[in-house]
Length: 497
Image 1 (tube, rainbow, N blue to C red):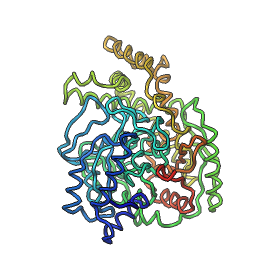
Image 2: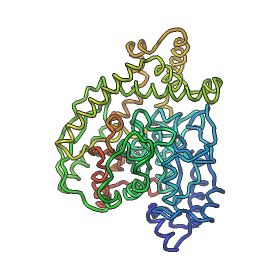
Image 3: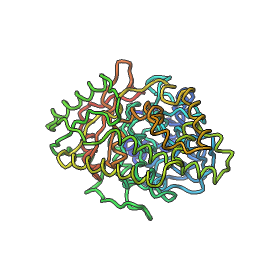
């Protein structure tokens, strides 16, 4: 076993393997030892295939940027041939018959995958507390949320089980858990990473898959390995000039940065400690020679949340229809109440409602694009608060009773229009949506957005700051984030606390 395992990031570990200083088997032994010690208390990993990984290390892994590096995948959109997937749900447990395209590319980078990480049911809420697998604990404080929906991956990275893990983001689900666990999380530009072959896009382009890491260069190097043209993909976007890793290694030009402080979900309060870290980060950027100016995108926030909910509920209805078609109606009874009701709402809305919502997305894209004509980047908090205790964000028992009642009523009448007009949807969704008041912008617009670990609360919980770049310009985000990292302003991971 390699005792210095946690002292290196993924690139550093791969370099040791290539030089012969350590073997892929020794790295895997180190990762598994940490998983065996930490995971019973943290519940970040919900499925293991250690023997398969040992066999891969023995036979020889592909020659890539991360050859021999232990790796984990989120148990949601990452199809891994021969291993089961549950998507955080009691309604699904199926063995994948093929790899998804992004998994193929990750395998080609040389990573050695030995398990799948916890996620909320279908990745629908931003805390990892599914009924199927139980809650994932924040590595900084037991009993607190690790965020979601990539909460298992973020906890595994922040605790030092692996230096990076697969993650996905449809409303902040890479950046959100990265912020609450003190890690690095980039949601790439729409279309940068593949989503096939089973799907062309997720949530009408809101979703993107990538990794959560401890260092910027690991995020950049994995993007080099996974990005690029995919057969049948709905988007083809420009390749960067040079590599993303090269971008992370060079200092950015002097930037003009918009300071985005106003939440895009009404009645959202930003913690004073989060605002203090935002102010300090702005001053640190100015000390580097960048210009930071308060500026907000001109977005109708009442319409903004409504449009997002409509699209997500429509896709949830599609997902649940597939569950029923593929596995039978009995499986629908195993769904969590909020999932069932989101699907109910999605079924009740019309095709015109969906198009109206997508038109609203375009308005948000246009207004944010106008802001980025003046500014090179946007700086904001990632999440308005630090991590909350378990049981705060999932629907309460009373809320679940309301959902079950509305679900029963929906069998007789169309409840979709009523639930919106009555304010029921706004009431039930606000606790979750308010926490996503800064992250949803990146999903609706498709812009690249990254959370970086920039502070700690008095309670010892991480605080992340978000960088949102121009479309297709991950390079500038990576350059700036790495510059901040080199300055020593990132907070330390959980295993160094």
